[in-house]
Each structure stands twice: as structure tokens, then as C-alpha cells.
Image (tube, rainbow, N blue to C red):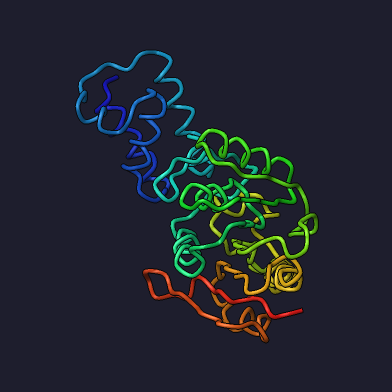
Length: 276
């Protein structure tokens, strides 16, 4: 079995199963099985697969056909130009969440202490720690997720203090210049409408937020004025269709602004904390 033949067979299996981007997925999985990067596949199409890589490739294809996301198979996902390790204990970082980083860097460039609420893989906290000179903190209610974030911070050389708690319950008052968050925002009634890769594999604690999808937004907005220093910023990712409700939650906050993603969909909301 050559690399070229393995790619053709894997692509066909994935395409017949209606898996998105079948050729790309086959390439990623085969490269992972070989311990190589994707260009290697094109440079060595006639190379015969050894027994172990062939077995690994078959297992990876089987897992992907069963719905397991490619990122959980390879245990990695790129975010803001850096490779993060991911496990089923954390949400897979999405490119859309990079807008949170961009907004935070633009509106609070002088922030000295930053808090990422619901850090998951640590993508936001680690990225902001590396992109700025800020002291970064991160919280997550899941000890398993916190462990993934800590490992990513260590591997990427970011200094991030990670705390296991609900929202910001363990964070001191008036201690942060900036809070960022990509909170759970999927309403529970929409569960069955999600892609199976999301519904069946990604952690529900990072996806769902009550009947309306607003439960975690509500808790973050309620506690953020306690945690932020005067004039501090809160920057949050918006779920689809949540703009009006989250804007109402932020009534009384100053300098509210909404940033769209590349598709023009409202993706990030930011505001300065009201004075307590």
C-alpha cells in the first residue's frame, strides 16, 4: 500500500460517509499516522506504508467515520498561529474566536492583568500572555480542562495562572484590567440540531448554557464589575442570535461595541465595567 493509494482509499471512504473535506481529512490523518507533515505525502507518493502506520491510519479513519473530530484524533488544533493540544475535555478552538484576541489587543493594549473565563484549552489566555506583557489568569470549572490549559501554557512558554472555579468565583475583587471569554452559549433545546461531531464529542459543559443559552453570559456580566479594575474591559464571543440579549445584559456598561466576523455576523461584544 503506497501513500498515494492510501490517500485515495481514505478519501473515498470519507466522501461516501459524507465527511466534510474528505481529501484534506485523509491527508491530515495519514500524515499523523506517519508522524510527518502533509507536504511529505506529496513528495513521497510511491512510498510503501509500513505495518504500524497503516494500522494507525486505519484506526484514525474508523474513528473519523464514527464522528470523532479530526482534532481529537490528532490531539492538536492551530489557534492564532500556534499549535494547541486538545482532548475531548476541551472545546476545539475555532478560528472565529481569534476575533476575541484581536478586539482585546486593540481596545486594551495596556492591560497588565488579564483573565480568561472558561479557558478550556487555554487558547485565549495563552495567546494574550504571549502577545502582550500582561499577567494572565484563567479559570475553568472542569479540572480536566484546566490540566489541558496548563499543559498548553507550559509547552508554549506562556505564564498563565490557572484556577479551577465557576466563572470568576475565586478571583479577587478589582484585580483585572481585562476579562475575555468564549462562554458556553448553545441553548439546550438546540442540542439535537448540532453536528454529531459537536453534539456527541465536545464537552457539554463548554457548549450548553441553559434553556436560552444565556446562563453563563448572565453570571459573567453580573460578577465582572467586582473583578475588574475601574475602567476595565470585558470582551466576550457572541453566539449566533445572542447579540440583543447580551446587549441587554450589558445595559449600564460604557463604550459598548460589537465586532463582526469575516462573514459579517456579530461575533464579539466589548464594554467597560460600570462603577460599583
